[in-house]
Structures are given as structure tokens and as C-alpha cells.
Image (cartoon, rainbow, N blue to C red; front, side, top):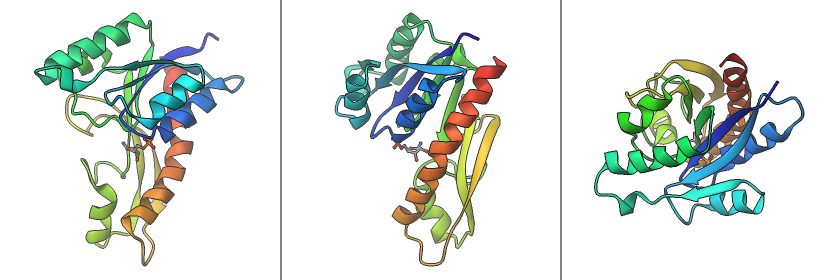
Length: 191
Ligand code: GRF
């Protein structure tokens, strides 16, 4: 089976992106990471991807007057790469329908909570502040509603007594790195 071509969108460290690259390079993987795109020129993940032989593209949102113009320019690049799927991995942008609609059903995201709980930012802080005991991460399809698309897979992480947001985030991230490659493989086999 021909591997599905995946583009990854990042804004930062890109540890999930690295997990996807490693999984995609494994024999028998139904997908491969073909390009990594960042809206931040100094994103650590971009330098890593370049050093690891993956096509990279930096497109700064600061160069565009509106979200729609940025999204249209980003989408032009994505379309030029002949991609089957888009994986958002710490891409810290609110995306408009201009970017999302052309990829409906083919764009996925990882979110650090058990959706539908804790949409948005600062999920680890919020679950601790609420005294919650159940946390985790979710891979879901991207729709025009923020953090709201159909769920593909979830991993549970308990909140432990004495947890700080950083401790909890680190434990969730370990699960993210396992969950995202599995979920993306499932999607890649199905499309
Ligand atoms: C992850 O926690 C992801 O769930 C969230 O942003 C973080 C990105 O981390 N959307 P990294 O850049 O993949 O290390």
C-alpha cells in the first residue's frame, strides 16, 4: 500500500511531530510525514525537521493582515505538496474555514485533554484547579468549531495528588506521543 502523504503544522517544540515522523518511517506504516510547516520561524521543530531531511516551510502570520489571508496562503502551500492528510501538532493558531474546509475529514489535531472537557488553552492548570482526577489527550478531526470535531482516539491520564501543571503536562505528553501515531495510522488506513 502506498503511504499516505501527511503534512504537519506546528508552532513550537514539535515533540508530537517527531513522534509522527518516527512512526511514519517505520516499516509498514500507512503514512509518511512529507513536510512540516510552522507559523513561527524560530520553532524548534522546524530546525529539527530540516536536519532530519523533511521538507519545511515557514509562513509567519505576522506577514498577513487577516486570519483569512494567512490561512489562504498556508493552504496554497499545503495544496502544492500533494498531501492526503494534515496533522496539527501544537499549531497555536485559530484556523478559519478558509483553511479547514478544503481539508474537512482529512485534517486532524491532538488536544491535551479528554474532550469535550477542557477545550482551549491551559488544560492542565484548569483540571487541577477544578480538583479533577481524570485527564488525558484526544486526537480528533478538525472542524470549524474549536476543539470540537469527531473524536478518533483518547488516552486517559490520572491527575495525581500534588500534581503541578508541568508534571501533569509531561505525563500527558508521553501518552500523546503514543496516541497520535496510532490515531493517524488508523485514519490513513481508512481514507
Ligand atoms: C501538546 O500538548 C499538544 O497536545 C498541544 O500542544 C502541545 C504541543 O507540544 N496541542 P509539542 O510541540 O508537540 O511538543
